[in-house]
Image 1 (spheres, one colour):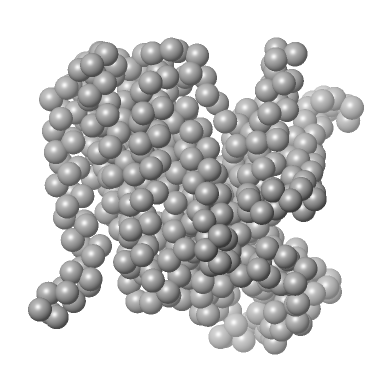
Image 2 (tube, rainbow, N blue to C red; image 1 turned 45 degrees about the horizontal axis):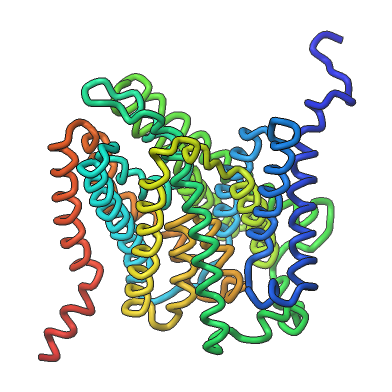
Length: 472
């Protein structure tokens, strides 16, 4: 038959083999974590450990065979869709019991944007200093918030744009530099997150029952299913229903992104190279909007009497989001590319920009969480730090180590803050198109970022500042 292929062809099995390796590494990492004392006490998440196991094995394989075990596009696709589907699963949950204080979501969004600005300011200052010292690319530091805060997609996109600049000396090998920043961000997220978890453990701030899952999981029927929900198994399995709702919401997200970008394709130029990748990079945000629409429809159907039962189940949705985030984290670490280190002129800039950026991000978020999220400051910190150096999934994986059932508002804050982050963060996107056009623009961008940072800091600490003034 024309177009058919044999089932023994590698193309039929390649995706399954990749999943087998990733899931196998997760099982191995979990076994090592349970059996080896220092790994268990280190509180390193199993998915993070699994990612580095795969990365190490692939490094050996590449040294022997000359090529990677994986198709990089497959790992990137798993990372991309794992984040999107995991966010959709979390967004479909009933969140009435998970709401935080009024303003917490807004404050989380402002923290995200101001953290981007901290990273951008630190990065530009260092890259400008290196430009005058050794002649490196003056605007290279602006890639720090793209690689750390936005992830590999935006780091690749902007690194490539700067690499192809014609009106100003191009950033030679800028694409490789951007990807290496994102890779070092994942390492910073893992190292900083585990460091903080161990500090909490030594200070006695982690419930011992969380470390021992056997003691924690005393599940009752009420924690698994609620009254009025569909049965666990009938003609349509309850788990199938959850996946159905998730993929319907994600399909709606795809449709929205597809039709939005049609207009930017027509505009071309700046919009096609910047706004279009940004839209597709925020697949998880559109997934969130799709999930909200599905929830509205389900609520309307139930209110009208068309639907007699509740179709979503928090327990299963939590498990599905956990699955997606686990596979996303192990795939993202396995896909780490440090190719920029092959260019010796990049070693010093990368280490200085990323090292200083990670430290600045750590202490800035720590300060904000102590001031504004006092009821759950450690949970909020782990979620925010993981997201702002890796991805949202990295933040949720770190959060799960001390809040395994996502009972604090930290997880919901992380998901719903994106709308605010886009509103307040849009000026950074505009500046990305100008910062590398000339040395003057690089300096001007630094000044504008400092001014914006000062304004948004006042907005972020508005209640804290004005309360202090009122007391006087």
